[in-house]
Length: 265
Image (cartoon, rainbow, N blue to C red):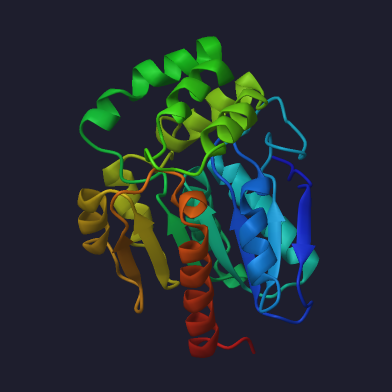
């Protein structure tokens, strides 16, 4: 399938180590705006809108994480950034891990924030009903789900902003992306499939979970040397926006450590 040319912004010194900051399902790159302003002094920060989202083209078919990862590979290659530290939230966390597996020469390291992998138990049991709702009602059903994804003390306006962005995402993209995460052939969102693909990752990865159980599970799947898992309790799913300064610090510290450990040649 043809790659989609992604709308993106590219800030920071051209020769600096590159960060790729990837949004999640039904979002767009604007959610990384405060992070980019802080990070672009030390890094080259590339922020795309994934296919079907934001200002990028909207294909009729193929709006799934594996295609999104290939789009990102084409973008990184075209920009000539060298290998990136690929940072992704939620579905974006799944996408950047797929990018690392499918295009390993383009990725120094992965940072996955509450990623869309490792689903198990009741979450898996609910997938068929949620997918049916997304196919029937599209963004309206997704917005109802997202509205409950925030901590009680999340910054004012954050929930409203994400509901509005989700409602602006095409209905067929909502359904295709969800199926691409969990039910399509080769989808990696369910735990057994997640374990198989995470074990293939050769780059060091930092994963931050809001679930203690998920953090404990992923620690047991790590194989790449230097990888780490953190648990941020009392955070909603949009942890990178609920804790902006903390996210900036952890991404910058991780990226600087990885760059120092694995310099570009």
